[in-house]
Length: 60
Image 1: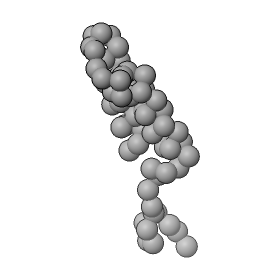
Image 2 (image 1 turned 60 degrees about the vertical axis):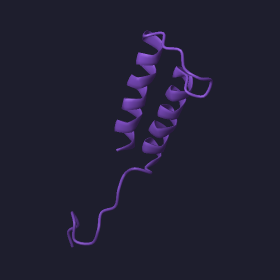
Image 3 (image 1 turned 30 degrees about the vertical axis):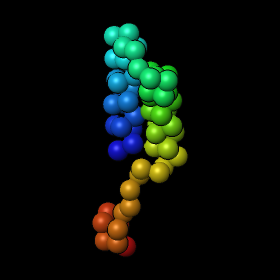
């Protein structure tokens, strides 16, 4: 789920950069891209992996 959010942020950063849209100092394409990279790093670390509850996918 975090990887999907990262992909959306990458698209927004690309559109800001390609369209040469002037934004404030906080909402630049580089900052949006870095937030996307942070979300992707969290996904790779297993934060957005979810839980497998008892009885779901387990065999005894």
